[in-house]
Each structure stands twice: as structure tokens, then as C-alpha cells.
Length: 195
Image (tube, rainbow, N blue to C red):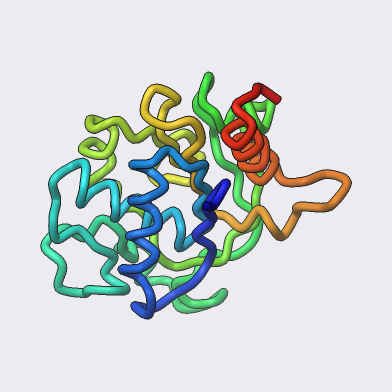
């Protein structure tokens, strides 16, 4: 009965498989979906398991012994001892891929959003995700980190996620582009009209 699904921020293993089941439901049933931080990470885990065939895929936060560490603390992060330890904090600039849902929503080639997380999409797995249809629609300036992901319209009407916390900058008069896109997609799905 849901018009849209958000999997928000979080940490640890509690409730993870239920969140992954909700993401799978949204992906397979074409329910508009937005993943935020941990929500992006679990969306990538779900896609890796159920589309890429990496059945053991997981975050090392949830299963440190996974054979397919799709989400992990990167080696260069593990060495950071100050500034919140391994946590990536504050505003970060993402380069957006032209023609993607995210770039169209931001109406720009860049997005600046605030972050508060430790774990990243493992760059070694970017190619298998993309080969199976996932789009890394925004990446860090050096191209190493996945900042935004989405499924193309041919696979899903609105399936987006970000490592960032767009809620930190979203305001009633000026909502985050990702929230705006989610609500627009939910209205279009419910009423079968283009908004």
C-alpha cells in the first residue's frame, strides 16, 4: 500500500535483512525508492546479491567475514585517526553523470551535500554493479567513491540513493532534489499521471 519507500540512515546489523527485503520489494515492484547513507549501502548489497549473483555480498560492518565485501572501510580511511576517526564528515562535492536522474534533479553537473558515515561502496565492485545495470550517477572528485547510485528508467521509474544526508539541507520552501524526485515519482505512480 506504500506510494514510496525510504531506507534511511543507520548502523549496525539490527534490522538489516528487513531493510534489504524492503529494498528488494521496491526494486522488483517498481515502487519509488530513496536510500540515504546506510540506505544506499544496503541498496548496493541487495543489488549485488539478487542481480549480480554475489549471494554472500554484504557490508563488513554487518558481516566482517563476507566473501564479497561490497561495502567496507577503505584502506586509506582506516589510517585516519583524527577528525572523527574513520568517519567522513561535512560537505563533499560529487561529480554528477550527465543525463542521469540525479543530475537532472540537481540541474547541475555537481552536488554538494553533507556526509556523516564511515563505510563506502568498494571500488573493486563498481564494474560488476555497472555491468548489471546500476548507474553510479555521482562520484567523488577523484572518481573513486560512489556518492549517488540509481537504476535507469528502463529498469525502474525512480530508484536513487546517496551516501550523503540531504535532509541536513532540505527545507520546506526548498526541498532536497532527491526528496522532490521521490514525491514526484510517488504521485505519478499513484495517479498514473506525469507531474
